[in-house]
Length: 116
Image 1: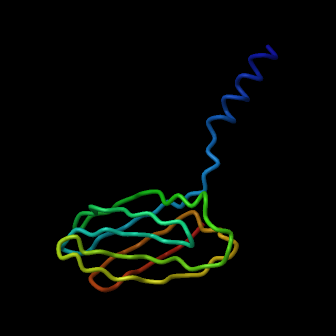
Image 2: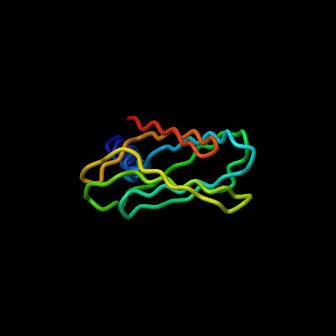
């Protein structure tokens, strides 16, 4: 019985992820596809092919982020024309980001909500 308990505990520990991630939800209210690049300190990730008038959910992995202060930087690219724009948002310290980011893209405007 003791061995079974140890095996169960070990398997539970191995199945847990130690990655630090933020769930990203993007709503594209445009008539063209977009790509969203998120940058926070040295962590950067791109989500492309977000279709017009659609929602996308992805995961931004910041496990190896530099432990310093910074801002979220969002780059929105029109995948039809190649034009892009960047937006700064919020402030974080010691490389600790939040668990959820919700972005709503509409033309040259970006609404951002960062939460736990």
